[in-house]
Length: 127
Image (cartoon, rainbow, N blue to C red; front, side, top):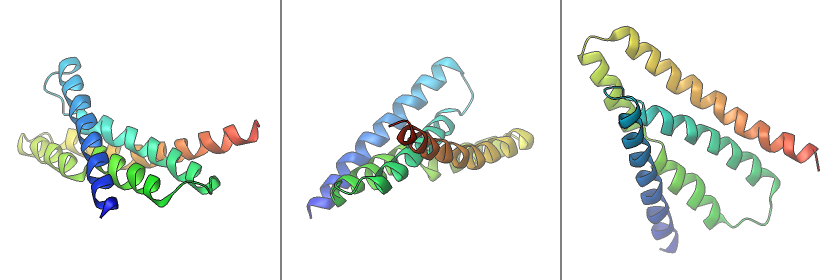
C-alpha cells in the first residue's frame, strides 16, 4: 500500500513539472505545442541517467526506484499529451509539422535516454 502512495505522490510532482514546462513553453513560443516535447525529451534523458545510476548502485531501495522511474518520470512524460498535440497538428492540416513532431519525440527521447546513460558511464570512468 505504501508503494501505491509513493508512486501517486511522485507522479503528481512529475505531472506538475510537465504542466510548468508546458506553461513556460507557451509563454516563450505561443501557439507551438512544445511543452510535451520538452517534457518527453527531458524525461528520456533523466530515464537514461536513472537506468545507468540504478544499475551501478545496489543500495537503492525498490521504493526509490518506483518513485523515480514509475512515479516522477511517468508523471513527467506522457503519451497522452503527446498524442493530443500530434492530433491537433493533424487536425490543422499541418501534416509535415506533425510528422516532424512525431519523429522528434520518439527519436529525441531515445537519443537523450542514451545520452543520460552515457553521462553516468563517462562520469564513472573519471573516478
